[in-house]
Length: 120
Image (tube, rainbow, N blue to C red; front, top):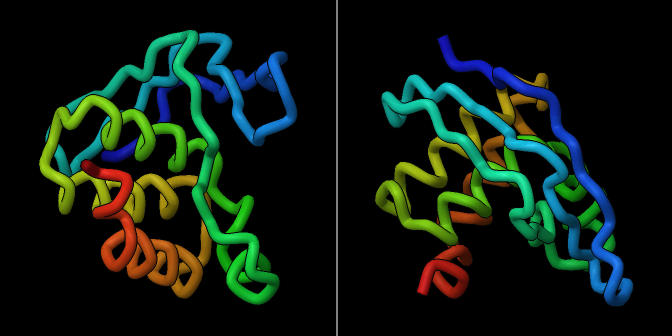
């Protein structure tokens, strides 16, 4: 069964207020979709969900799934799995944290449509 096996420990990056966060301790996520347990290491930098700051879009999808966003950012950075699997893990991990289906499906559609620019 998919589950987060550790708490999220984030610290605001010190250099400047650019929306960056640093993982204070490892974040461990067991994914049924990928069939792997991922460990995002302490010190990993993330911007959490890269949602455009367009008011309605951000209201619907921004700031709703930080744990899932950290794992997704790690997968996009390391490319441990294919992009479609990384995106499916985002949706799966969002479900684990209780994000409603309509919201996680919007997030999934967004990363499928626009995530290619960050995957490169």
